[in-house]
Length: 169
Image 1 (cartoon, rainbow, N blue to C red):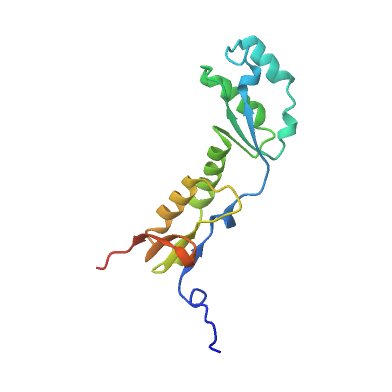
Image 2: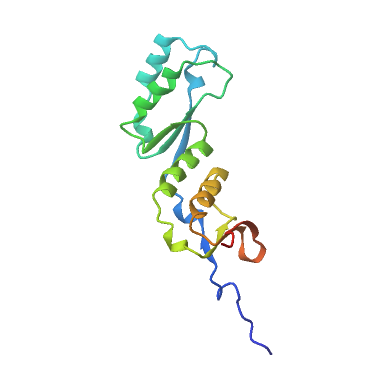
């Protein structure tokens, strides 16, 4: 019987797995509509009173996204005021959804990586993940890898989709 050879393991292909950079921690979303009159009308005095009485310590060391789930038109300062209340407790606060929060976390992390180890190498950005990796993170990874990589693919080694190939000079 012939020996089975793992060609992928023996190739120069480098795998860039965004899951490796997924920051651990609890992610929560705060919906400010809970503090609006009937979920739509912001009455400043009542809004401030709700914020004053809220237990902000429950967000200790968590990643927090602030949004409004209703079609209420709220002033910009309302989210800022919530963020100020969260600042002493939360690891990070953004305005948006949990996906926006994850994208923001990846933006910070990916901007600080050294991509020179991928110089002139074929790179596959691993596509399947068990953690919620937003599309923006994949786009950022490809953008940061492009100046270094000889080629960039997406997916798994067995079924990769070519995205970029360095032009021959």
